[in-house]
Amino acid sequence: MRRYDDACGLAHGLDLIGERWALLVMRELMFGPRRFSGLKRDLPGISANVLTQRLAELEARGLVRKTRLPPPASVQVYEATKWGLEAAPVLRELGRWAARSPLHDPTLPISHVSVMMSMQTMFAPPPSEFAARVGFRFGETSYVADFRESGVEVERGEATHCDFVLTGQPAELAGVLYGGAPIDAIKVEGDLALARRFVTLFPLPPKVD
Amino acid sequence: MRRYDDACGLAHGLDLIGERWALLVMRELMFGPRRFSGLKRDLPGISANVLTQRLAELEARGLVRKTRLPPPASVQVYEATKWGLEAAPVLRELGRWAARSPLHDPTLPISHVSVMMSMQTMFAPPPSEFAARVGFRFGETSYVADFRESGVEVERGEATHCDFVLTGQPAELAGVLYGGAPIDAIKVEGDLALARRFVTLFPLPPKVD
DNA sequence: CCGTATCCAATAAGATACTG
DNA sequence: CAGTATCTTATTGGATACGG
Image 1 (cartoon, rainbow over the protein chains, first blue to last red):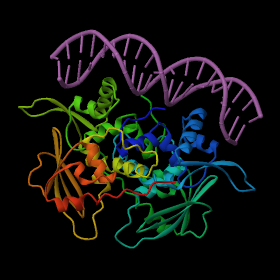
Image 2: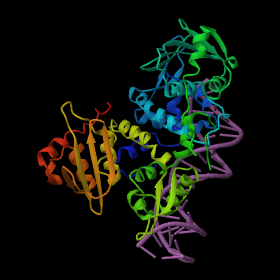
Image 3: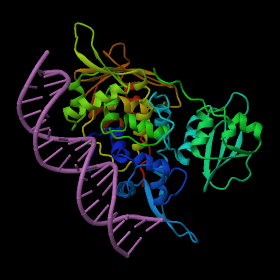
Image 4: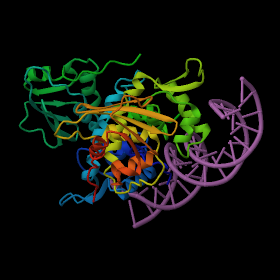
């Protein structure tokens, strides 16, 4: 294993999660445990052996735990530890910073975790009151998120008791939030007026150059 | 060049500054332009060819600019662009997060930039009033920093008009601030009482486990 | 001395096939 | 499904040599 010979906290951080894929694996674990195959599917281009190795390293460093879901599922999953979850601000700052890049290509594939996390990062509560409980359905996987002045809380789970529910592909939702696509690119159930307001609350920072 | 096939902002951020050494190069540029040899010296273990390549890539991506210092110096230096400097919060969040790691080894070498940046990251203004202009002298290189309730501003430059000036090796200062070493491990000129209070304002977060 | 360029050996990553 | 094993390719690091 290759390490930096540097006492700087930043350098140590890179020793822990600086290898290729590591931060993206952590991203995928941010909203709860995931299976190996799901991780592989949502990390386009990673190979099984590299994913295995990254998970083992992250586990050895105390960032990830390999556990078994309670019955009746009883499948093996990987989940972030408490400390692993505390890396979320790092991921968000990096994402926020990169949003200014003129080289960013929004046509590449994007996972549901990425979209959920981007909303946590980019949500700008308006001067006037705004609060909403929003459901998201991406095929098999659903999330519920609370958007408040104080920030955004996201949970994986059924989209119940929501002000409105958005259904579509992650890329379609991203297109509506960040790409100026009309809201009818996705399916909206519930309070349509609130949903229309909602999708305007994710301003992108000005691009560099 | 190896890239992630992922529209996520975080993944794009890693495409920009995720390669080995890139973030540490940016760290070294955070307080002003640096020469090639200085960078090489303060990045222990980097080889000249890798440093050349990283600098060229960062320049191509708009994070670094290769310029010449005004006469009489007239030497070639590398400096972070405005956008490059905006990556500072990413570096600080990663450093702050890694500070909880039980695997951190403070006996490794540490650069003066690292110590200055760690102070920006870890400074915790006390409930009671505190403000100080502090000079730092590390051999050839000096810094001046303003510690305020609102945060810490750091500049490279002569240590003049300071409440006190600290002189020593970066590792010695780090030992005093974070390692519980007595303040007389470093040289203090000026308001000693204020300096004694100052060195208590850098609490480390609790370690994991 | 400063910075690049070149060569070589050691690692890490990627592709693919395969097993319990 | 959840990985291993194997092979190939790319990147890194170290040494050294070269040009301004």
